[in-house]
Structure formats: structure tokens, C-alpha cells
Length: 193
Image (tube, rainbow, N blue to C red; front, side):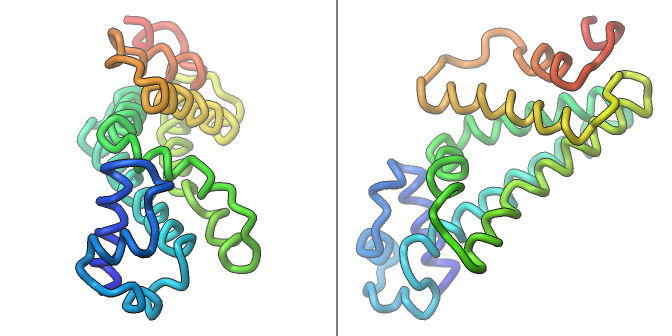
């Protein structure tokens, strides 16, 4: 039943605004009574945390798949990860907003606060690894792949957020390459060709 509750909540988020997600709405969507939720989730924030964690896991999985499918070239793998990030945000704008919205920064303490600290960590590790591969291959001059990957994620998030909130039309041309090249410190050569 936990999976059904989470699927119902995700469906509600994907169809609208996270503020419309209430225990009553989730129960109605899942076809259960509200008290049936409590053995699985204590409250709305617990559902949101589980939903956001699942979404970040899905995003990480998509990045890994994209990187693996890109082949052996480090730069292609980095661009594939960046493109997969933006594609996920494009495909699930409401879910993406929930991942990066108030749920990501609630006034939560205890284990909830610890859980929140790990959200997005795997996505960042994937970006760090692909950027480190670019450094090793001589494509990037980054002296600190960790910090540059954080900057890259921030740039990707900015573009994804603008597309989600401001309803910016589809990416004109290929914005992935200039964003990734600049923030990843990719040198001339393949990055500009």
C-alpha cells in the first residue's frame, strides 16, 4: 500500500501544484481512507520526503543511463548527463519543482533533516565523476571538479527552473553545450566544434 500511496501522491504532483497535495487528496487518488495512510506515512511532509527521494533516485538513474549510453568519450558523457538532467526536468516540471522547492528546505530536524541532506547527492556524484573524466581526458582544466560540478548543477538547475516556472519555450539550439563547457571549464577543441 505504501507504493500505491506514493504513486498517488506523485500523480497528484505531476498534474498540478504541490500545495494541492493533501492527505485527503492522496487517499482519494489511491482509493483508500485517510487513516490507511498513517501506518505508512505520518503526515504530508513524510509523503513529500518519500516522493522527492524517489524522484531524485529516478533522476540519478536517468543520468547513469545517459552516461552509459554515450560511449567512451568523456565530453560526450558529460553532455549526456547534462542533457538527461534537463530532459527529466522538462518531462516532470511539477515534480522537479517539488524536488527543488520548499520540501528541499523545510524546517525539519532529527532524521528528517538528515534525510534531506542526502537528496541530490547521487546526482552530484555523477556530475563530479563525468567532469573528473573530462579532466583526465584533457578536455577540462578544472582544478576542483567537485566545486565545478556544483556550479554546473546550479547552472542546469537555473535553466530547468526557468523553463519550469517561467514556461520558457523549448531550449533554443543547444544550450547544454555552452552551459556545460563554461561551468565545467572545458577547453577549446571539441567543446566548441
